[in-house]
Image 1 (cartoon, one colour):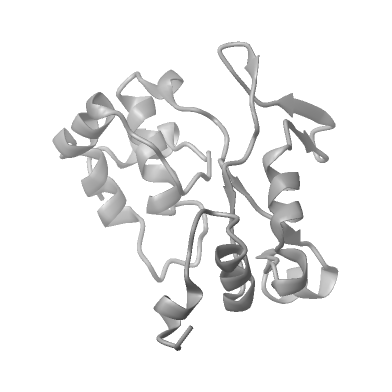
Image 2 (cartoon, helix red, strand yellow; image 1 turned 180 degrees about the horizontal axis):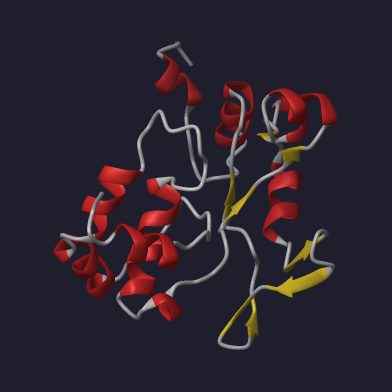
Length: 173
């Protein structure tokens, strides 16, 4: 067992954010780390049945907590996600991201996502308003899980900027 195992488990953070933006000082903390990463490498195995030690969701948050800079993390995701919480899927496989398909991935849906300024946490009965320095801001910058057709629709309709689908697909205009 790794000598820092108990301390890391005690300090383990469950922020569950897979997307993290770093400034230079944050990146230096990660690059300079020789202890916490080795604990995660030893303890968090890919084939592990337990879901309480997932390196890409817990390592940086735990490292920052142990380094005394946890307060510097923005504690919310920038990706909009719709979850399939149906009982049959949950019993068999757990929660799954719903895939945006061609029909529901148009410019209006993206505009709707970008206008969301609060998140309601049903299990906690609370609303969290998205703010930076007391200024109201959109909660989400982008969404996740689009089908190929939905992605091509967003690109070809200019939702994410100018794009020529024919150039990517190799088809003549």
